[in-house]
Length: 163
Image (cartoon, rainbow, N blue to C red; front, side, top):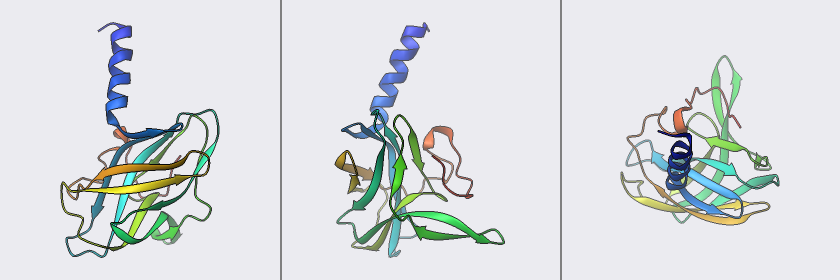
């Protein structure tokens, strides 16, 4: 395969993996899950790429699938114990950078689910950015997905978040 073909194929794969792209923000590989069919909470994960030359920040999210939505991360509270906490002030998205939201790290927390997150269903989540405004993302539910799946080869090591 020539270099030119490789670049074209890589670009096509990247564009096909994107589920939302607006105002300099590209959302890739989103999925949501719940721990069980009776769970009262769930979470959404994705990669957010800031394609612009301006820093941005994810400041909120909302969906009809949950009564309350927060941006969460895991922080170590001692003895290797991780606690989920709300991210105050949002998630920084430097110009040109990609932020991985994955299990064991930063994620969109869905609390008070209005219905079960059933395998292969979809939910709409509105992500609110400081500079780019609102982006509506259709997120597939994948309760069978393994923690290491997605993030294009990046592994969730449950040690915190990464940019």
